Amino acid sequence: MRRRRFVQLAGAAGLAASGLGAQSSSGRPVRIGVVGVGSRGASHLRTLLDIPGVEVPAVCDINEERLRTALDIVAKAGHKRPEGYSKGVDDWKRLAARDDLDAVINATPWELHTPISVAAMQAGKYAATEVPAAITLEQAWDLVRTSERTGKPCMMLENVNYFRNVMLVLNMIRQGVFGEVLHCAGGYQHDVRYVNILPSGELSWRGVYAARRNANLYPTHPIGPIAWWMDINRGDRFEYLVSMSTPSRGLNHYAAKKFGPQHPSATRKYALGDVNTCLIKTARGCTVTLYYDPQLSRPYDLGFRVQGVKGIYSGTLDKFFIEAAEGAKREEWEDPAPYYEKYEHPLWKTVPNLPQRYAHGAADYFVLAEFVKAVRNGTQTPIDVYDSATWSAILPLTEKSNAAASARVDFPDFTGGKWKTARPVTFDA
Image (cartoon, rainbow, N blue to C red; front, side, top):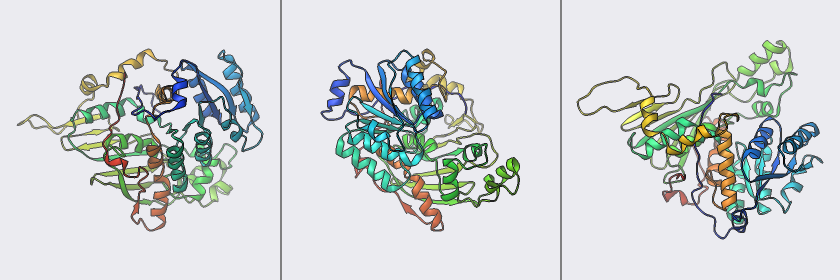
């Protein structure tokens, strides 16, 4: 992925009478348990240890070698060696139940994201999860209802929302540069067949999903920024979608080239179509085109497009076209430099002072730092449980539409009508 620099996003609203907030804002460390320390979780762990005031008293993983490595990471960073949890696939439950944690972060296989987050909130802790936050509508509702009942936030760690161009466009929208935004597009377009099929030729846990489910399995990278740009759950909402997929050919082709045409992974029938296209209509009548293209030969491209009445942004080109002054005529894409110069969000200018060694540039640092800030201050997380549920729900909704010959499928209103109250994403120095 491209290296980017990013900005900080502040929490939008306080949580009522949060005992956790009162304790954390008293100056004591924010104590976080981490579940799942494979490559992604270990990256999160290293980043957490760079955030001032964070302690990691507990780490869980069923893989003993990965767990030992994670415990060593914490100790070598000068912190007390955490307690390790590896007694079976459910040992994360013991970690979540500890009374000395303020929050639990998980980077586990997708099916565990909701159960771990729910257990954390039920135990009075903030929850943060890798993407997607849920893989069924039932799980999405479970997150929402648990968060509302306990008063504890659940933040999906969607780092693309912190990309430099994403934040620039958001700032330009807020200043009216594009006029009214009517249409957005984006997609997870990234050849990740090597993630689905292991070097041994066997399917990874992600590959099992490709074999069984035909849907947009990974919608949150593009839809998170789009939802911010379009004020989704903050004055508008996704109302319904239709979805369709191509046949599945890419994984068979990949496996045949690597392991031979008779290999089980080359002859297996995969449910997941190679390219999924989803169209979304909002309550205000605006539209979204969403793509999922993870198993064909192609370069990485999130394919962002923002179309307003007065102009357009192309993320693929990283160029703009804003209507000219009265009487002027031109139809060429414009270099982005003047727009970065004029509309760069003020917080982005703090980025050069931050470490640049994190995965995906500084994005991983900021998404975790903003979660920690919310825990410390007892405030709402910048990506709240309604966002986490809505963005993740695209997975089961596209699956349902695909199975019904691209029929219309309605989005649940996870907010219970709260979306009608405009509450734009806000920023704080």
